[in-house]
Image (cartoon, rainbow, N blue to C red; front, side):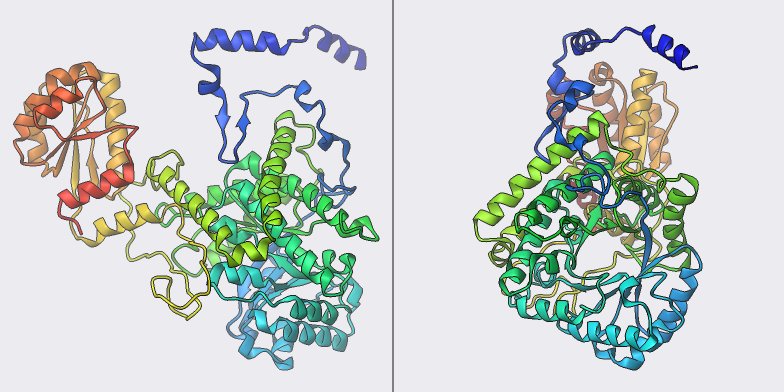
Length: 621
């Protein structure tokens, strides 16, 4: 059998890169290779259309093994991860009932968000009644000023119950700089509290407490290299300050946990986590820890909310599924899948069940947990890993050279950069350079919000983000990528008038169908009713049909060559009874404009701004 395989492979002579490029050049027929096939990423580097074994030459990423320094291929020999679900605790007994229920449905990691005012011995006992902490990872978050109190209560509870304290796994989320980024509160004097927290949790060696919530950057629209670069600077700030406060690097590093977001850029996200472990190991190593184990990065991944949508919300399941796949293949320690309906309501039992099962499918049916670092050796992903690592390092170094992450946050530099990235991504969405299926492309034509509204973000004064309150420095903006289109579509729906866009299709069959499809998608993004047609023999018959249908907009759909013949007669036939639009940007556009035609839609227009203008013209406010 082995001989036949060898013979099979010998039948295929090796193909050189030069031969591949000759074939590509022939197929491009003179078109520019760089412009046509090379992808310029937001991360600042180019991605080639194909990679070969020679592209691995000189890359050290292939030298590592899973569970070995610098942990690029994972901090463990296998690829197990914990399925986490978070619970916002109102009533402790009710939260306990929910926790016990979901623990029987595949969850093995729970996150409790508890109110500081409720913290007491009885509260913790009611919350954790019947839960075996030796079998499940328990994660807790509360007001930053009460984390030490929470930690002491937990230690006392576990000791009282007689659990094997060294076997317990979990975390208490202390991250003052995260609150600074979100709320603009100055919590820079954190070293003493952090040291007290580490001391309080000494009986629980498996509990993390110094957290880097880079998920916040992801949810604000940061690009992948920015999320990673700033996360490294964020973590290094804690390392530096706490070692200066008297803790050893081993004590600090082994208590740290990184909570990353996961976006929909599938291969990039896999590479991000691999690069993150490698770079963090190198950073911790510079502090000269006693054990290389201190260089391991503990990573929790949560699917980002930045790209979730209110309309066609079941598409969110597709987004979070690929995101969970990225995190699982990249070897993270635990994953939270965001329920698909989180944008507009508190997740219910149905959406939470789906979110859990998305991970269980990856484990039980796809067996993603059976192979450690399956991306290893991939010519493409290994190169992405190195490229993202390089760009993230280029973000990390200037922050350190200019005084560190805390100083940058206090100066508003981090917020300014991330908010600018979020703004650029919003612009990309408005121009369809970044696609959100169901929102700015391929919307559900007949979907109505039916009272659903995006949930707002609370500010530090307890109000919403629109309210103003005093802040020492800038905060991050958490407008989701879809928010502008959602506001537009909700505006249309709230007006009580649903405009009709009528496709006047005529002439060349292929072009009229293509442009009608483009135009239907275009106007449906604003919630308009779209009326497609097979075709009309004359523009006059098409216009008459549009008037009978009560069209508010008549869209002429034909070929560029035929617009010179059809556009002006159609415009005159409409005679101001509806808005007239030409689908395309024909060479005769200037002549058509001279004839009075003002509206043209095509791939180069800003879809969002154009639709806003149509709403104004149609009197929708």
